Image (cartoon, rainbow, N blue to C red):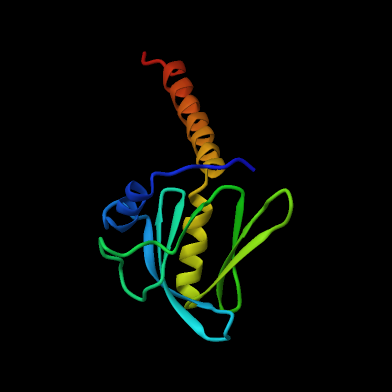
Length: 142
């Protein structure tokens, strides 16, 4: 796995600006002390920002963590949703607690956030456009 370097200030600014967020909202996570910790998730593009807050982040709030959503597999669970990251050494799983309807929405957006999904969508729509253009050029008007 290669290392990616980010300019921390620019990344933080990107995380807290409200525009261009695909989806954002509160979730909970079970902490090591068996309590539920309130978090705020922001998904922008293929980046998932996690804030230790139960409300939308402000400019002065620092993101607790940031995940690049490539090679990951989200799924709905009994209590919310989880994201499994496939790695050469081991899998890493993030689990979040939220309402069932919210978990379905998060899973859909996380699936759509990775490059592989977007590439497949592009190939699909290119093939449709090709069929349309072939059909329209082959038809003649007498």
